Length: 356
Image (tube, rainbow, N blue to C red):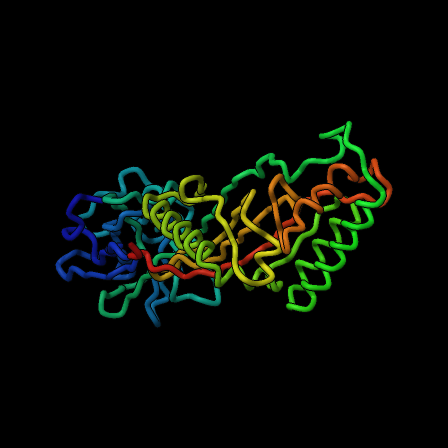
């Protein structure tokens, strides 16, 4: 398409900065193919690559391609068809293709093979004598993915009996500290911290198998109101929008956007997940009508165990560490063991393309 499309394009689509698409017309542009085809130009004035637009005009039958179009010959004095054909219908322009639905004859989706970069233009034609007064256009769905990862760090909370092979488990202390753990479990249940009780019980059982809390669980809901997590999610969403504006549709988040954060709150969360040792982020979404819409999934990972100087509730952290190291499973029958734990949070989002 020429840099100034108006001398030849009857309709010009302009993708604006906010991702919406305006429709302009030029009555002076000649129409060919027996007034039965319209040359359409598109200019990308946004800051992101455009992959598809959907054009609609009621009663037009604009997708009823019949062999005319810009490659059908006789399209006024326009000479842009010198390298035809550009596609199977004869209506395509360079680097464009159509997706149509027989049940929607007044609408067509136009795809751009390599994406229409910011500041670039393209052209194609559609069936019928379209007018800017009745034609509408929207930017089609741009699918995108999000990912990011902070691996679980090795810490002393993962120590086992094997870490201190010369440690000795005193039978009297073993029973005393197990009783202390049982008392803490009872306290958790009393203050309605059932998940914390579940984790401590699993620690004492010593199997070492992972425990996961799914999206929608009590811990997941508590994270939604945790100020540190809210700030993390906000930072991730802003970084996502910035990347999408730059034309990326496979976005990888990393530090400093992703951070290991403390999660202390005076509730079940405090006794279950003291902080993020590891963090996984994934998500999918699409762009429609000027909004990035999708879901981010966060999986916060922790090593449930007791590190040096971990006092825990009522200063029984040292007792729990003794059960973990001196009396750790499987070396000691009935001994405790650290294990991987995680909680998943789903965050739906709908962000305007103009979000700062």
